[in-house]
Length: 149
Image (cartoon, rainbow, N blue to C red; front, side):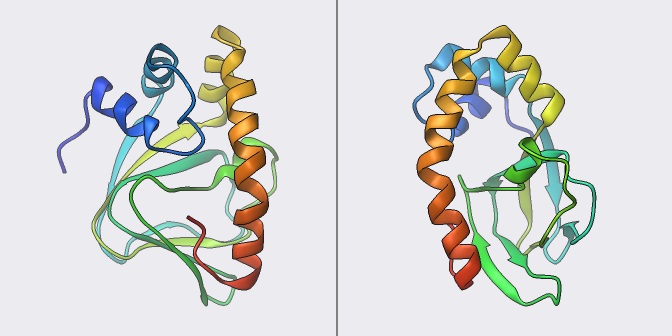
């Protein structure tokens, strides 16, 4: 897949619930820190128990989240994210992620996020506000095995 330009990444971030309220200048700052990763269909992104140190944003494709017994718990698509627990704690992954289709994932490491917040603390406030409204729904859906859109 063709890598996204900085501007394309910023416009993509505007579609993601965590960043929807940020102005474009802040989105560009976050976009600079994103890595592009291409995955093939059926390729594992990470497995239960692995070290968690980044969040994943689906730019293209579909990703299935599974529990420790590989039972499906959610299927995510473009503009959705997963792995967000890695931004807030040092616990290993509690679920696995597998690409259902060819996919492009944009990733943001904890250290890059902290650099963005150091440059512009309002990013943290915006993210916390968005995360506070999204988090309860995501955990309920994961517990019930439903989609976490």
